Length: 95
Image 1 (cartoon, rainbow, N blue to C red):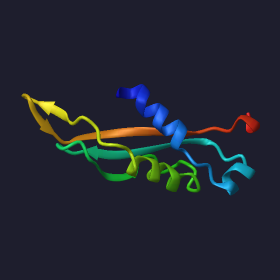
Image 2: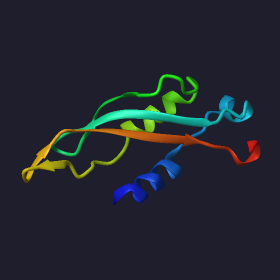
Image 3: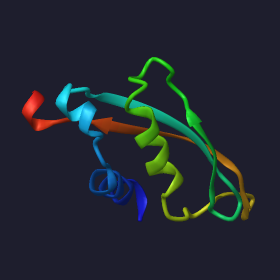
């Protein structure tokens, strides 16, 4: 589905923690992962350690539960590819 489909998935699947909502915690958590040669999302971890620690578990959950990707190809063969996914946490009431 591409980049726009991924953004829709993140937007509609994100569950803001009650404490984070009440505290107006916002920001972007960058998640690093590897898309393997079968399109599975693997080796998921936080890439940017300075992000709000309270938001990190939800960002990891979102990426862990992503549907399969189309794997990258090199010389026509599927290969592993490292990907960085920014998960943006933003609340309308806190702007």
